[in-house]
Image (tube, rainbow, N blue to C red; front, side, top):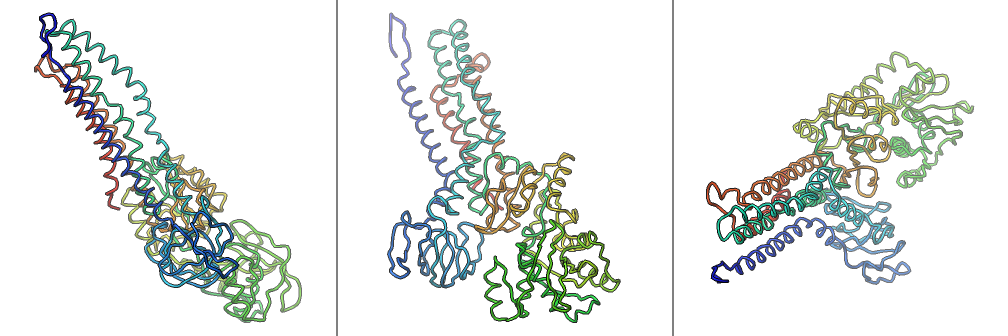
Length: 590
């Protein structure tokens, strides 16, 4: 105690020291916890290779730091090494572990012409590749950038916390002042000391930090958790919106299926064409300038039967075609009918006359007024009931034949649909196929709500219809053809594989292309949103209860005061507890 003019006063040097210590300790623990929250970024940075074996003039090998690798360099990768940058294999073949960037656990076979991603691990043979993207342009660098931007962004729910925090300090100062004045005039002796202790306790216990940390720490952990599973969430707003989704619309091709169609059946009409080979030959001739995946399927099938393909985008088809002497028919006036098919003029070998040939779906047949015979119609319907997509080959006057194409379902598609339904979501499939084919695919994966015969430009209109019903809609597509629908949806989820995906087209990008990633993205978003609400609730309740207690609200009834030391401890605990609660997201069971 200190005696001044005969008045004995308590000395609170220990309070000042302990409060300062507790505040510093709290900040230290908070920093440690926040550092743990950003662990995903650290893991991604550690994936990068440090050096690369660059081949000068194609032969002389030199190990250089990865920062010195330039676009166009030829790089040698040996078994067990990391691929240093993105590129295309020009010699050799191997199996690569891409799990660190895609979340795909199974190794992927790579051959000449295939793309490789920096930071993936070469498991077996040696190969050479040409660097196409280096430095900040690599796929891994893009992922790191997107995760960093997402972790630094603000969710809409944080606007309330920011607004409260803006008024928090003036309110606390006002409460401390009122507390001091009230106890100075009404409190027990020594009134000044009693009033000062309560005012200081209010200032110490008040914790805007907890409100400020409630959202960003949860966002940081949630987006990091998603990145570890090959799910890139563009920003905090996308994460929050994904947590509120009530309906999911899935494009069929590339989302539920592998996007690698293959020709399974060929039907011939009674037109004088003796067998399916000629049907395939004509179809391949029309498809040779098309970029559609089905065109590739027709060309590969034609090459396997002895037809020559000059498809400009497919090296494998070109190599296969060299084994055969037969050339494709030259094509003129090629025209695409979006969502329906294609047409072009070719010179058919049978009669030597130029013919306008059409290849497409039933909508294209209706457009050119071509009717199938009853026999061919029955055969076509049987194939459609198996979930196969049909290409109808016709001239201006008659049907020539039918080619059936099937796209293999992704193994995890049925499981993904079941899990999405368990989340209480309304599931829709959208496709350009006819209703019979669409229904067959829907039955295989367990989807009852189907939108069939939808043209690409109509997809966004279907999304609007669901939104008009009050639903929060997520659209899942390949990120390229589905861009308008992805933009229209509340959340656009781009699904694909490796560097082939349009990473900029969706709010959320699933690197591996696994449909289970849709479920994981939504579940992580829901858990993160729930965690944010918990944090905000705790931070609000803490301040609403302890600030009045610190001001002396319990003194008149119970004689209880909040010591500044305890106030400091409570303040530190409040901040740390919010961060620790956010870190629980790292333990989410998917």
